[in-house]
Length: 181
Image 1 (spheres, one colour):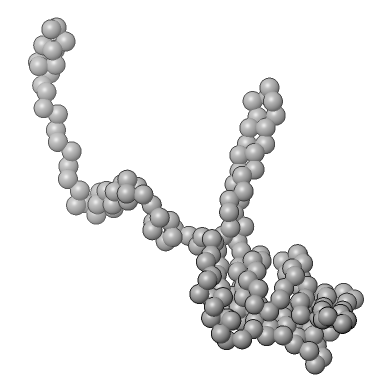
Image 2: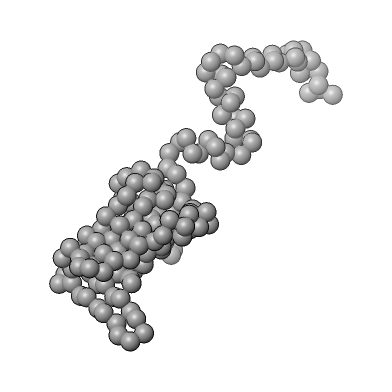
């Protein structure tokens, strides 16, 4: 059994046990989400297929899912350029997204499809997210060793525990002597 739902202005085909990625939804990881904007449900079988079309939505039909991850997707680079006019603009964008595990489908009547606890455990064991969290806390964890050293040095300077720079050792007389030589 599968359904087509509407979320974030897009239509997504889902089955029980699918892991899907949609535009950001409110909620924490592990929270349950219910989609009631179901456009289409199909229950294929060997003999006949049952199809339900909504106008625009199927009444009492719903899809339940669990939030697996929240974060931002891959960076998209937007470049604008006009040749021979010295006009160049570069901009980046990372869309916030949510990854979901579809746990059950209900057609509003007697038919429904759910994922078993064992299948859910297997799906979660194989699950890996490419979404990166947003914010400065996540950036400090992924900094390189050079950047970490610079951040630590700035913090030490603010705290007043940094070592003072050594004074210049050459005098004016020695400088002029080295210039003459």
